[in-house]
Length: 364
Image 1 (spheres, rainbow, N blue to C red):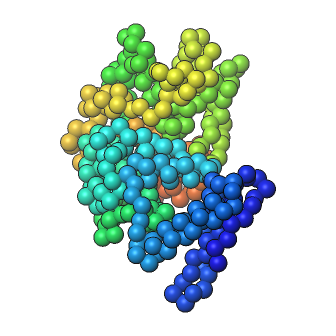
Image 2 (tube, rainbow, N blue to C red):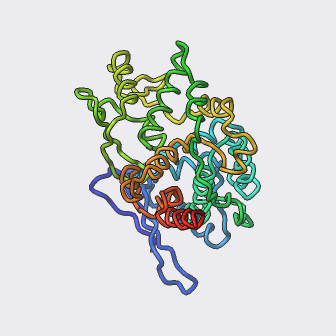
C-alpha cells in the first residue's frame, strides 16, 4: 500500500512504495522525498513514482544516463561511505571526463568500450594492475546501474577476458638504471623537472605508493630532526613511520626552504592548497628516454612503470637479506602474502650449500 509520511528532519512529505514479488509479497520498500509540503500534492507525486516503479518492474522501462554520470554516481556512494577506494575512483572518473567517451550513453559501456580503454592505457604505459583496477571500477558501475539503479544498459554485455592476465614478473631498477633515470630527470633549473626528480627519489627510497607521496603533507615530515616521515596508506587504510635516507632528507630540507609555507610537499601547479594529484607523464617519458623499456628488457624483466620504484625499494632490501616480514611492514602490506613476489630475490641458503658441494668436488 502506497503511503506518504512526515519525517522530523525534513519539511517535505516522503513516500513509501512497496516492491512486490510474483506472488504479491513485499520484497522491500522504496522511500524518498516528494519535495512537496502539501499532503495532497505529495500523494500525486507518490502515485507518479509508484507508476514509474511499476513500469520499471513490469515493462523494464529504465532511465538513461551517460557513462560519466554513472561513474560519478558510484564515486559519490564511495565518498558517502568513506571507502578508501574513492581516491582511485575519482582518478578513473576524471580520466574519462578528459576524453570524448565522457558523453557516451551508458549503453556503450560494454566489452568493446573497455577493450579500447585497456588499449589506450597500455599505450600510455600504465601498469597492468592499474589498468585492471580501472576496468574493475567500470564493471562495478555497470552492475550497479543494471541491478541497483535500474538504468538503461546493454543487457547483452559480457566482460569475460577483458582484464590483463596477472603479470608475475616484478620489474625493478637494474645496475646502472637508477643513474640513467635520474640523469634524464636532471632539473637544470626547471621547477617541473625538479618536482619529478624529487618525487622519484622519494618513491625509490621509501617504497611508498605514488598517491601516498604525491599527497604527503609537511605536517607528516619531522621538520625538526629530519629523520622520519609518517605515511597514511589509503589503499589498505593503515599508516606507518619510515626513516628517511640521507639523500631524501637533504631533498626535503631543500624543498622546505623554498616551499615550506605550503600544506603539501608536492603541491598542485594550479592550486597551491591542493596536492599534486596523479601526474606521471614527465616521469614516464624519462623512463622511456632512459631506455628502461627496451624490447629485450621488457621481454626478460617486464615493463618498467612508476610503480616499479616501489618494487625497487623492496627488491634491494630483500637482496640485502632483510626478511620478507620486515619488508612487508615497510611497504604497509595488509597481508604478508603480498610480499611473496620478492621471495625469489632473497639469498638462498640451499643455493649456497649446492655451490659449496660443487666446489668441493672440483678440488678432489
